[in-house]
Amino acid sequence: MEIDIKRGYEILPNNNVTFGIRVTNNTDLVISDVQVILDYNESLFKLQEYRILKLANIPPGTALTAKFTLKPTGRIHNEKIEASIIYRDPKWEKHIVDMRPKKVQQSNTHLTRISEIDQSNNKENDAKKDRTVAGKKKQNSQDEDIAKMYDAYLKEIESKQRETEEKREDSIIPYSRNPHPSDKKLTILRSTAPPRKKEEPNLKGQKKSKTKVLKQMLFIMVLFIVAGSLMQIPIIRENIGGKYGIVGTNSNETELIVTNFLNAVNESQFSIAFSMYQGEGVLVPASIQMLFSNEGIKPNSIKQIDIVSKEIEDDTAVIAVNCTVSSFNILGKETDISVIPVYFQLHDIEQGWTVTAISFIHPYDIESSKKAEVIQQ
Image 1 (cartoon, rainbow, N blue to C red):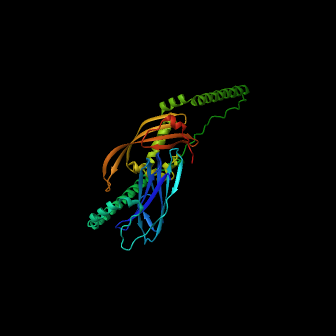
Image 2: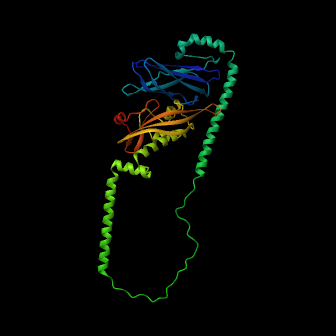
Image 3: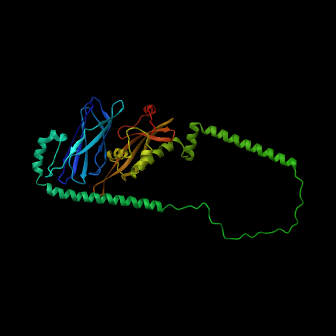
C-alpha cells in the first residue's frame, strides 16, 4: 500500500474520547494535500473541534497523526468510528482511502484504553502513568475551569460578531427614489397679448434641420465605434484605467478578488470565500477554514493586508500578499503580531477572475500558472 493507516483511541479521565488516526507514507515520494475526514454517530458523540483535519504534505517514510476529541452524549458500547483519507500523489492525482472501522467502548471503571496507534510507546507510557496518577484529580479540576473559560470566550466572540452585524444593518440609510412632491403651489401667469397668426410651415427649413440632425447622429456613432475599438487594445485600456482609477482593469480586479477573499476568511464567511475558489484540493468551505487556521490565520486575526507583488499575462495572474496577523491566548488577549505571506494564483474564466490555487510556502510562477489546468465547479 502507498499509505499505512493505524487508528486508536484513549478514554480521558473526564470521559471524553481522543481518537487518533496515523497516516504513514510508504512511497519514495511526497504525498500532498492529505486530509482526514472523520465519520461518527452524531447522536452518540459531540465533536469538540473540526470534522476535517488537514495534514498538508507527508514526506517519504514519515507518519503524521490527526487527533479528534469526541464527547459522549450517552453510554458507549461497541460504537464504530470510521474515516476517509484523501491525498494526491506526485502526479497530482487524487486518491481516497477508507479507514478500517474501529469500535469504541467505555469500560465500567473508565480505565484508559489505547489501541494500535500507541503500541510502540507502551513501555514509556507505563512509566509516565505511574508518575501522573497522583496529580490527575487536581489537573481535572483545572482542565474543567479552563474549558469553562474557553467556552465563555467563544460565546463572547459570537456575541460581538452579532452586535457588529446588527450595527452594520442599522447603519444602512434607506434611499427613496420617489421623493415627495413639494407642497408649494405654482402661480401660472396668463398672457394678455393677442394670439399669434398661424405661420405657414417652412418645408425647406425642416428638410435642412433633419439632414443636420442625421449628420450629427452619424458622427456620434462613428466616434463610439472608434472609441470602443481603441478600448479593446490592452495597453490603452490599462493606461486609461490606471490614470482615472477604473475598477474594471485586470490589475485592480485581481487585487480586489484577493482582498475580498482574505476579508471573507477574516470575517468567518467561509462559504463566500469558497464561492470565489475554483481550484482543486478544497472540497467544502470548512477546508478553507482549516487551510488558513493551520497556518496561524484565524477569524478576526488579520489586521492588515499588503500586496507585495503581482504579475498578469492574458488570463493568468500571480499575486503575493503579506498578512499582518495577531495571536490571542485562551483569554482573548493579544499576545503576538506576525507577518504571514500568502501566495495566490488566479485565472480569468467565463465568470471572471477567480482564485485557482493558494500557497503559504513558495510563490507561483506566471509561466507555470499559465499551463495549469483549471477545473470549473
